[in-house]
Length: 594
Image (cartoon, rainbow, N blue to C red; front, side, top):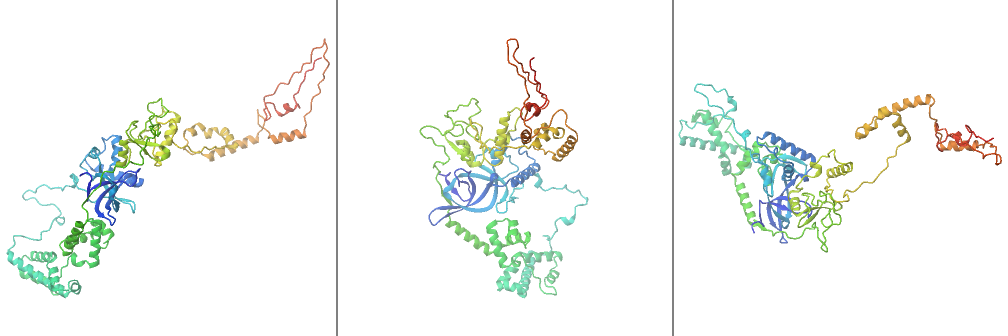
C-alpha cells in the first residue's frame, strides 16, 4: 500500500513510451482535473542519452575537475562494467516543468545531489538511485553547475592563524579585518540609549514628511513612522553614537545637520511597486536562486540589494499574506495519490504462438544449431539464452531482444548492463578478415546510434549496402606500371586513408612518356587498333603462295608441308602471331618434296 502511494516531493518513474526508458521526474503538485483525473506537475530530469555529445564532453570535463580537486578516489578502482553502469545513474536537473497523467507513474526512485565525500559505489549498490551535479537548460542547450552543493571538505574550511604572543605585533592587513562599530561597555545606560533611538526615529519620520518621494510612498503618518522605525534608522543612530564617543549632545547635532534631518532608506523603500511585483514573480519561479532572479528579472539590481530585499520582505505583511494564500491552496490540493501497480502486458513482449517461441536473434528451438557455443547469445545485454520472458529491443529489422532482467534495467536506467562490443573490444590481429569487416561495420553502426546485435545468427542482421564497381581507365593502369617507384601500391594499400600525391605521379609519367616517344621501342612492337587492322586488310588483301603439288606415286612419298616457325617476339590482338605472319606476307617458307 505504501509503495503505491505517491506524495508531493517524491522522485518517480514516468512511462511515455512502451519501448523507451522511463522518464525521471519529481512531483511538485498533484491536481485533480475537471474530468476527475489526477495530473502531476513535475520537474524534469534528463539522462546522458537525452543531451548532445558536446554537452556530454563538458559534463565529463567537469567530473574530471571535481575528481582532481577531491582527495577521495572516485573512479580509479572501478571496473569497465562499473564505469559503464555509473553513466546510467547520472542525471541532469532542469528548471522545466510539465504536467503528466498520474496513471503513467511506474514506481519510485531516489535522486540526490552528488556528494563528493561519498563513494560512487554507493550509487551502484542501491537500486533505483541516481545522482546529479549539473543543471541542464533544454531551451538554450547549456549546462551549469548547481548552486546548491554542500561545501564539505578541507578546501572549504577557514585557515585559523596561530595565536599571537604577548607583545607580538599583528602583521595582518587591518583593512581586511572587521571594524568595531559598538562597545557594550559604554558610559551610557540602557535607558539613555533607548531615548536616543527614539529621537532618531522621530527625526526619520520628520525627514520622510519633508521628502516628496517618501510622502507619495507613505502617504499616512503611521506608515512613515513604521518606515522610520526600521533597522536602517537604528543602525545609523547607533553608529553615530559610537563615532562620537557616546556623547549624546554631539550625536544629536549630527542627526540634524544644517541642511535638514538625515533620511536613511533601506531596500524596502528604494524599490518601486513594479520591482517588488517582479521579485515576487521571480521568487515564485526560481525560489531562492538569486542569481537567476537577477539575471532574468532584475538585471539592474545588484545581488546584494536583492538578498537584502528578500530578508526585509519576509518581515512584511505581504509575505505573511502570500504564505497564508499558499497554505490555503495547499489545503485544497491533493497531498498524495494512490496508483495501483501497472500490470498490463508490454507490447514489446515476444509472445508465443502454437507453443513455438518466436524466432528472434537465434531463439532457442530454431532449426539452426550453431557449432560454436559462443553463437546464439539471445540477450543483447547479458548474453543469456534462457528467460521466462523476452522483449523485442531496437529497430524491428534488427530483430534484437532482451531478457526480463535486462529489459527492466533498460527501462529504469536507459542502457544495457554490459558495454557493447564497440565500446570495450578492440580488433585483435588474430581475427580473420571477414570478422574484421563485420566488426568494423558494427562499430560504425553503433556510432550512428543504432543498437548492435550479437553475431549469434547464421545470417548477418546488418543490412548490406548496394554494391558498386570502380572503373579504372587505361591511363591509370599504365601509370601504375610506369610510376612504380613513386606510387608504391603495396604501401598505399596498407594505408588507405593517406592521400596519394597525384601531382608527382603525373610529373613522372609526363617525363617518362616524353622519353618513350623520343626513342623507338625495343623488344616489343606497338599494338595497332582493331579498326586500323581491318582497314589495312581491305586495302591490302592477302596473297596465297603458289605451292607445287605432284601426284603421289609408289616411288614418290607424300608431299610434306612444314609450317613456318611462329615468331613470338611480336604478339598482336588477333592472336599469338603478328600481322605479317598471319597474312603470309613475310617469313613464309614451304618445303616441297623433290
